Image 1 (cartoon, rainbow, N blue to C red):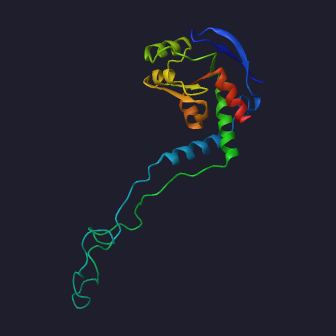
Image 2: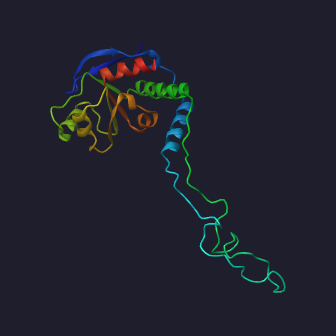
Image 3: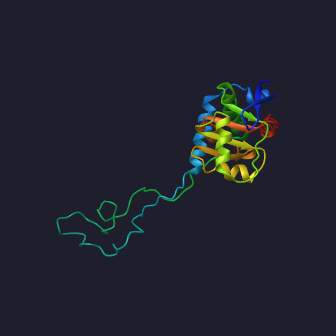
Length: 207
């Protein structure tokens, strides 16, 4: 089982924790990681693009000229897609782009993402994350003590209002509850700062 150091909020090592081998020590499957990220990004697409067909464009009720005898091509409406002012053929219409991967594939992708953080030494386990009040300056101090000045994902076991509201204003830092952990956010952030309780909780659920 992978063992990692446990830090306090001052950045001092206060012990170590054994993480679930199946979750934090799994082989990194890049193909599955790619599939999971594409799925998440597809689900985030709004799908609101819309164009008008010949039935929806204004006008065009009258036949522009008679069928025969003019020497011009026959035409029934000025709103034909062949005309400059006409409708659009096969244009975009509002639709959903989202789809789902099988549950086991999603879990495998999450295990791969977590294992990659351990492999790269970018997983920081904190004994506890708690602030007496909502104060961004205090959260910046904690992140500085943990050598995490870049993009960081801060994960707590449950909703912690003081931590979440103190961290969400810091550029590049994203607070998250353990049950909201996902592949895209894990790969988007350089460091994963997770409380000991949350790490054990994730290991139990995914293991």
